[in-house]
Length: 194
Image 1: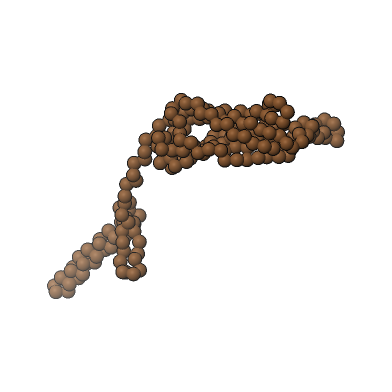
Image 2: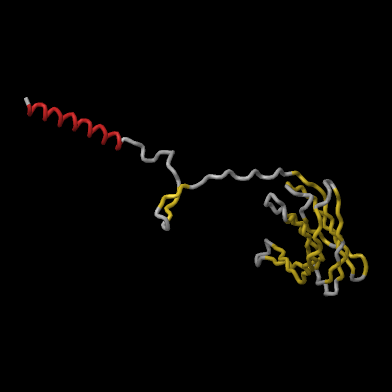
């Protein structure tokens, strides 16, 4: 009878141990409630990561307007046959608190005014989502260029292409201006020499 009680006790203990082991094995080891962190080798402790909410982004306000860059270009260089005088302008917003840096670019072809003087106008219509338009600045730069093209014809005479070559280019930084009032037209009048 004594051996029967011992056998029965061992059996109950075995069933209990097996149940506990099975419960441990059946657990989902990839639980979504894990604690993320890092091991601090200086203290020998596990440090959990502390979560912080991102600061709310500033509200963006659509800011529109027109930037007109009217060049006076003096051409001292010789204009080759098939040559064209042109101009370009760039406007980039700096310091916007949203972290964006909107940029606009425009190009145009110059017209002869008289002698060596050309006029060239680049018009940039902009629409920028800005968070701090009242304190933002617009950096304006641009270039005048003298370009020409030459035509190449395939040896069989069936195809032609025009290759554009820049003979002269003058680039300058013109202005750092405050963002104009919504809907305003702003004119900048730089002079360049080629």
